[in-house]
Length: 281
Length: 289
Image 1: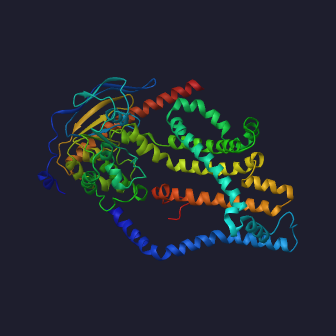
Image 2 (image 1 turned 180 degrees about the vertical axis):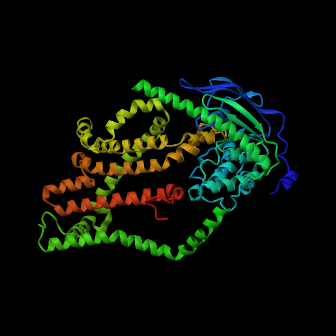
Image 3 (image 1 turned 90 degrees about the vertical axis):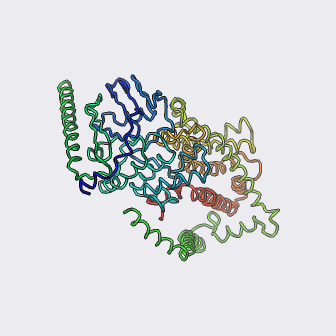
């Protein structure tokens, strides 16, 4: 797709200006280890935000805080201006390793959220079919997960998280466990899905191209203890093409910030291990 | 989708092949299973007939079958000695197994979910799990005397620990992300149990039940030899020793083996077929799909 045709395609149905998720001075300790130093950010309604950072920087931990699986040591984390106290059906999650239930068929996996809510079977299946179609799973409703490929499994997990209609979708490295071809194909294939979903999405990733291709905004985290070191808005229409020079510029910009951070982290690590060695000898 | 185009022809192929080969495959698997056993029995028969072994110590299969036929008394099954022994043995083994399952499964879920309780109980379990339950027989004999109570108590212990251990391992093997998925859907404890913990632990739980039943069955024989007042296959085998009735002993041994096999294949085999084999049917070393 050329840059010109991309121009006339829609922006996501306007990321709103109302803050959906607000983090104020979040700090997180694991035992005595400070994992997050100070994270403050505001994620707007219907915004697609990608969070990227060096490995081990606590990106996933931040997502789990939003999901309510973990608790912050200090600071305030709000959704719709209400503090997050635990997991809830207003936030759906997709994990890197799919986490499907092998004893349920594709359809039953997808309707699970509605089944728990107590929605009637027929209505649940109807609502599930919409997302099964949009994730490209039609025809696989009665298959068991063990018969599916990795890419298909992740489609099921995404459909499952969208079917019970959470306001916020949390994606924890959703393409991280897939091979490169499948991953590239899925990112392209699912671009329209995010438009259709039209809700707040927070995606953790370690791939810059994934982030710039999908997100309205990219937050770059520092290495541990993490802070936000860059907040890059990507105002390009969807669906996007990686060959778009404007997209390339964003990709280069973020890659530069990230590799500077990784270099810093590596040299600190090397110094620390050298010091430990000297102490040892 | 590239994935769909790959798997659809394969599925069509499988469907086309199924109807004709079903009967063939079933027969073939029976033959493959029975052939080594038949060959073994033939060699045994020939070895005894040729006088390589003493028939009073190792009677030939034909003699054992004849003795079994007499004990079975097919003309009047109501008066069948063999069926009476089998019935009593089965009843004892099953009641002990059921008691063990009813107590061990809930306890296993509790210990699997509660880390502190698990840390306290785990060393005890490691000691008790490998202990042969038969070792308790004399102790129960002292307190309960000879009879069903002692036998059932010993078999219960034989079944209890494998079931408990497997349930704990099954629950502990469930990934925390699985729980997180349903908790983020707003699931309460009952939903978490019913939709994740129970089905998630089921594969390990079923192998625990299988082990439990097998332990109950083999413990039974020894317990019946030591503690039965009358009846039971163990009792029958042990009583035959007074008359040097080796054929009856072998009839008992054959019954124990065949019933053990039937329980494993018929009960647990079909339980597995409707659950775990349907879920994880492909790509495992032991599967034929």
